[in-house]
Length: 272
Image 1 (cartoon, rainbow, N blue to C red):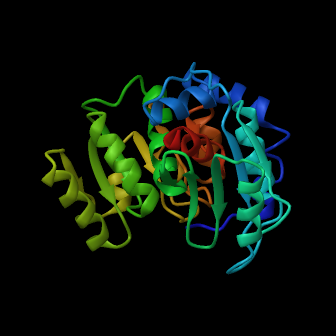
Image 2: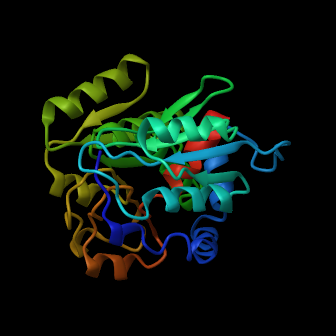
């Protein structure tokens, strides 16, 4: 799991309204609508009482990312859930969350970022939810993905979630990963379930053949301007962003990228 930096998330809580407006311009849907769709939920459902969500900081590993828990809570509150950050960390934070009546826990360490519903036992990882959420957004940017060729870059945890979502939406998936065995395993899993999928072994060649791209890799500046056309649409959950600055200017409103919002929003709807 890519470790975020404080600078990646410092403005999330103050920019959510602007972020959502931009998301609507790009996809035609709000953050709540995209997340609910990714989790096969109705975005208009009003929960009564609203689930109480605790975000618990963890000090293990490399320690707390300043502002991370607060940013997660701000996203959940923006979506009209009742979220709070525990004053305590680790086990003491879990105890505090449950003492205050939390129904759902959000917490992360160096290896996993998860949401757990204490009432129904549902659990989801951020990687899985992020993959699903970005495909839901990409589908809206492309007016559907059925029978369309899509290049998936990165077959890690986020890429796997994205690949299965792409397949279920009827996309024709090509997968590139720096580790050929990793991409081959994912393709084999998809084909075994009856979905069309193939391995790409040359990233440059693959980029020239595709105008719909999901970049789930942690590699920086791998998508250059020479690969961008007027039809190119890119969803990029990967951190750092794999699109060069020149390419971003060319793409204008045809790139979907954020550090936390879509993944966190999809997580909460996945565990309801």
